[in-house]
Amino acid sequence: MSPVGDRFRPCRPSRHPQMLDELRQFLIGSPIPSARETHERLSKVRGLAIFSSDALSSVAYATEEIMRALIVAGTAALVYSPPIAIAIVAVMILVSMSYFQTIHAYPSGGGAYIVARANLGNGAGLTAAGALQIDYILTVAVSTTAGVAAITSAFPALLPWRVLIGLGTIAFVTWGNLRGVRESGAIFAIPTYAFIFVGFALLIAGARHVLLSGAATAPTAGGEAAGLQVLTPFLLLRAFASGCAALTGIEAISNGTPAFRPPEARNAGRTLIIMAAILATMFIGITFLGRALAIVPRAEETVVSQIGRIVFGTGVWYFALQVATALILLLAANTSFAGFPRLSSILAGDQFMPRQFANRGDRLVYTTGILSLAAVAAVLIVLFGGNTHALIPLYAVGVFLAFTLSQAGMVRHWLKARSPGWRIKVVVNSLGFTATGVALIVLIATKFLHGAWIVTLLIPLYVFVALAVRRHYRDVQSLMSLGGMEPVPWPNPAAHPHQKVVVPVSGMHRGTLAALQFARAMTSDVTAVMADVEPGAVDRVRKDWKRWGHDVPLEVLPSPYRSTLTPLLEHLDHADQRDPHRGLAVVVIPEFVPARAWQRFLHNQTANLIKKAILYQRGHTSKDRIVINVPYHLSR
Image (cartoon, rainbow, N blue to C red):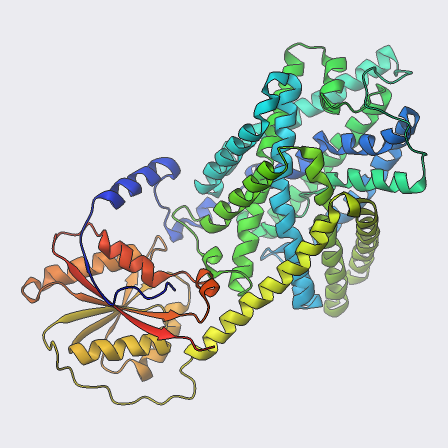
């Protein structure tokens, strides 16, 4: 809730909100009613486009990251890139099989967070959630900067503008996701399938080129400085850790299972299998082509671009490859925009994040999560100057930490459930736990000094903050609870016996009780209203109203678009029209005031929003309306 403003505030109408509403509807479309939620879900075709763009885009730079790690030991060390890629694909298969089981065991979504919390406790669940949230943010930054790198490889003159291009891309993806899940699937489907088509064309044409022309015997000229280090097992592990970027995004389908059409688990599982097959094939194919064509990483051109120039020349197909690669990389951020808001809403529902993240906007998407992700990713791009290779060391640690906790949680789940086939499932998840755990250790060991230490510090900080948020919400519930209280007689109305008063409520607690008593002291004509926004909330309030509401009627306002404000404003207008000779209804707003300033950001600030909405109300009358705040201060 907001801090208390003026206790008595006359409110005048204005046209500005109408203009803003029209602009918003022009940009993101008309509001979608809650009843159409099922119709807005994704088919497998659109689900693959939304949830796999991150994973598929990683093939554009994962091979290059392996090569960059090996090249410091000389070009001869690049011979190890195919075996390393095979090892990574083996881990990829295990992780995909494990998440396939997770989808069917936990179809409500949430992925690693839900699995770890249910089976390993809050600490493990929040650690997995923190790892995933950080990974989602880094995915937006890395994929965007990598997409810009593909553009500047084909058009070097754009290199000085790479930060602005990246920020523009984030703005475009944000706009697409604010329009809704189904529409974002339609917007981003073409780039995803174009990349798959051109990517397989590259593999086929590349294999034909190698068979007809033979493999290159020496690296292409112009590679980066090489041969400065001795090839050691540690260097090979570092190359493996760098290539593990290819596994990012695999968990996204598991996290977003509820976004699919019924039967959700079956559709999500099949989409995961298709994605894993495409990803493994393209990653292995590009890595083997890079070795067969003796490609070495260059600062001014990506590995995929070099392969394309050799295989396709510099004609139409090469530019199609660069455009498709740039688009999939730029729009791979869409996977995070699908996953981050959904996971944030689950965390907010469990009281580990501000409750605003649980609210769905006009287009049935989690607007707060989308805008927050865009803002943080944009800051990262500016801070790192749009440099992909500076961001990647921070990237995969969180991914594999979430993988490992998820696998451990699934092992315990099967051991407890002992459902049919549980022994095989335990073996699969145990292998997945071992593989991802080893990869995690390798990642931390090899990437710690290159930036991974930042992530290892951020995750414990994330857990600490999440627990503090939940502790605050529980303190508020305790302080606002009516438990231990007994109903007392209310004062008879005296000051304005004929004044009509409306009290908006969201729940039955001490703040609501104080506002109702204040309103009842003013007049006998008091009506409490509640917008039907959250499922089950109205039933809970009605149950408590019988004891605490006295003779004040409770009117439930239908809200098909999940809005608190619009139904309230309409109710006020209708109340005034029904009984115009008694004047405008006074609005008495209950609000609680947190003990500390930072705690205000953890609440929806509904009282403040109502005041502002009435201030700019486009009602039938131009008269002032009185708004009265009744504060309830939290002492803890």
